Length: 266
Image (cartoon, rainbow, N blue to C red; front, side, top):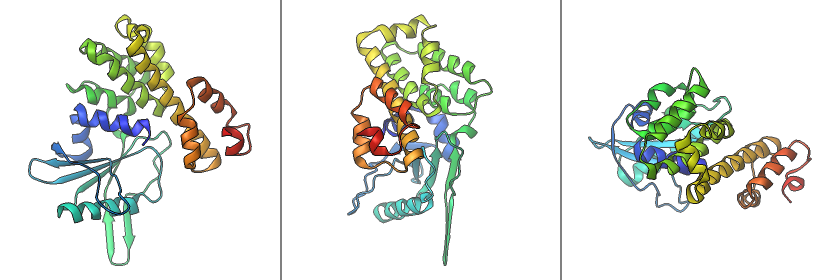
C-alpha cells in the first residue's frame, strides 16, 4: 500500500470527523477490522459503524479506475456476507487528474450505485478551521480560493498544536501535499515559521519531514511512469520504493527521455 493511502487512513481515523460527515452524512462511532476472510483476501480501506448499527465503507482512490464500480460491488457483497448488512459506500477521490470514474453499474437484472466524491468539492477553509486537526490536514486536498494562503493557515494550525505532535502532523501534511505537487511550496512556507522550521533542523523530526518529501516524490514518479508506460509491474514498484530522494528526482527528470520502463529503471 502506498504512503498516500496509509497517511489518508491514519488522518481520517485519527480526527477528521468533519471530513467524514461531509463524505457520508453519518456519524461514525467505531471502526472495524477491514480484512475480509476470503480466498482472494481483499482488503478494503475503511469500514466504520454508526451509532445505530449502519456500516459505512470508504475507499480512498488517487487514480481513475474504470473498474471501480465492479470493485465496489465486490467489496459490498463480501461485507454483506461477513456482517449480514450491506454498507453505505463512498469512494473518496484524491487524485490530481480530473475525476472520470463512474459511480454506478447497470447490468441485466442489476442496478448498483455508490457515492463518488472528489475531495476538491469540499470546502478547504471550513475543514481547516475544524476543531479536529485531522480535518485541517485533509483540507490541503480540498477547494481553496487562495491555495498559498490556505497552506499558511494550515501551517499556523499545526504550529498551535502540542510540540510533540507537530513533527508527525507536518510529515502527514507533506505526504498528502505530494498529491497536488505542493511539497516544495510547503517547505518554503515552513522556513518562514520559526516554530516549524525548528522541526526541519531537529535530527529526529527533520527525518520524518524528509521521509514525507521522499514519499511524495516517489508517488509523483509512479504517476509519471504509469502515464507514460502503463500500469507498473511489481518489480518497478519495488525498485522505486528502494531509491533515495536524489535518485528519485533524477529518474523523474528522465521519464520523458527514455523509450521504455526498462530503460528508465534498470
